[in-house]
Image (cartoon, rainbow, N blue to C red):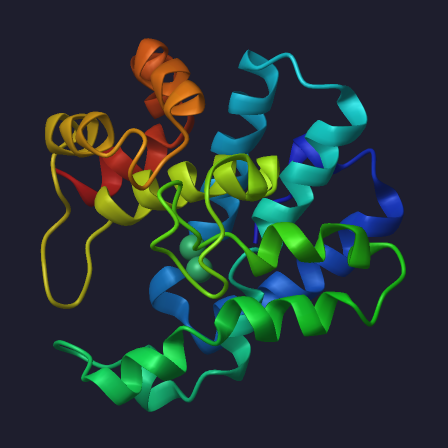
Length: 208
Ligand SMILES: [Fe+2]
Ligand SMILES: [Fe+2]
């Protein structure tokens, strides 16, 4: 795994984070690299939003760890080829809570647990696990939700090819105020090309 330059100054956290995200990557190699790209994008958005350094670091670290709860999801479901049935989908939806529980075991990482717990909430309240809406969703979780979608859409999956950047842009635009915080989403669209370059290496290798 490559070192993340952006959080290398956080010596204490960094080793722990590499260790636990490495465990998830080993279990689910298909999404290996996803956490890194989501954290790179999230940090970039924090900079565009001119967030305070401390808050940016918190969001950045939470982004690295956002899917760590997938470690508690059975491989047969996590790596299933084809569509998930309703029961399997319910199991997948437990990963934010599992992640938050894992983080709560460390006094340092517990500060990020709400961001992880709510990263699948939607701005219109139709997300999970709590159905929070609007500004009730932690800011970091609203940022990560956008980054997560961008990386998911532009990645190849077992059951489909990667979507084009144009498709991804239009989906984001269509879902402002529905899935995504409209203010953050508009900022992302405004700086689209610059942000997409952040995950450029993957785009080059995955989308010939
Ligand atoms: Fe997730
Ligand atoms: Fe994710």
